Amino acid sequence: MPFDALVAVPPQKMLSDALQRHNLKPVPWDDLTAHKQQQQRRFGPSFWCRHQAAVSIALVLASPLVGVTVGAIQGFSAHSSALTIASSFIWMCAVALITGTGMVKLRAGSHWEERLVPASYLTGQDVPDRIAQLARSLQRDVPGATLILGELKRDEVVLDPYLLLEYGDECVCLGIWDGQQIVACAD
Image (cartoon, rainbow, N blue to C red; front, side, top):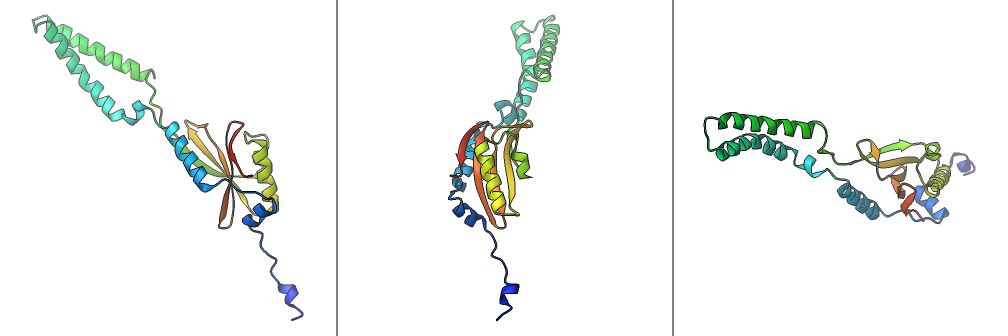
């Protein structure tokens, strides 16, 4: 038909096509998953945080135990009750001082957060130049593609980021880095 060309739908640009045009192979999902699990274990919660309830119970139960021990050492004489109470009180004050001043760190574990970022965000940030240039190039080639920055955070400190490019049902990992050291990059 003569009018078919007027209503023809332009071919949709796909992320996989853009990767082929740039002769790139994304970071495999298995590598990203293994890296995320390894970092989660590496930056996990401290011993004190993992066993917080048990440590708290042990410290509370230790107070009367200290009193009984001091009383037993003194032979449970008439003067030992004051010493027993005083030693238990000193123990409770020591526990309060140690936990209240932060001498024992109750560092919670880390967690992964993902957020959408514009390509302009990559400039001047801690994203290595190689990964940032690759992301901008692919996003120009596939209009409408979105960049997703994944970050491993602990106490609001970013430990180990990665960058994804998503378009429609397709999503690829462009790179993983730690500071300016690239752990994995699409090549």
